[in-house]
Length: 254
Ligand code: SF4
Image (cartoon, rainbow, N blue to C red; front, side):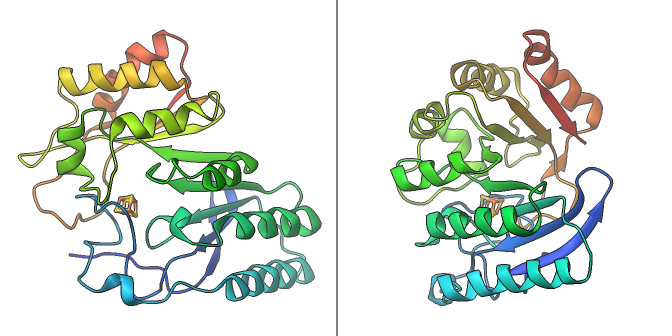
């Protein structure tokens, strides 16, 4: 099974038609995934015993990596269109997440003022005011909600600690609709969050938290748990249709 771990703090630029020249920032260890979830589809692979023993990069290491990369690209006359916090787990777990966002926004303004800053988060840390405040500063807080039913989230996202859908909803409400919801749909004997009951519950959550955009996608790499099936693009579109009809901005990546 092929999995993917980031080996650098700042990665790229990767060039894509969708977002242009993109840099990724990994605030987690290089050696192992560190996350509050252990999703059955995670591209980083499954959580390994002892993963938490690997140190996170320090604030200084992250700041120096970001400043060094930005300055070098600018000196070489290369632009950056997009900067995304993603990487080997949940970026908001970093104890200096808020300070790192401040540094990034400041350096972005200096070197690449047009670049769009995004954070991909699983929304498990939204009970921390400083995490919400930092996420609100970036252009795209992208918050995961795959399952609107706790028993299904327990199987699909395998959260640790005190995660509940109700807590995620409360956290998302703090954004007043100014965030992007990211939802992974999968099928298979392990979990199927495309059933009418699962989708009806998810529609209800979307109506409550009213994201300005919904990113709907399915797996396209090997998964750490076998039997996870990709949902075809046509079925993603069918799942999105009721929300699109209500005026929600649903983007399908299938
Ligand atoms: S939240 Fe993201 S990083 Fe964490 S286990 Fe799920 S897919 Fe992997």
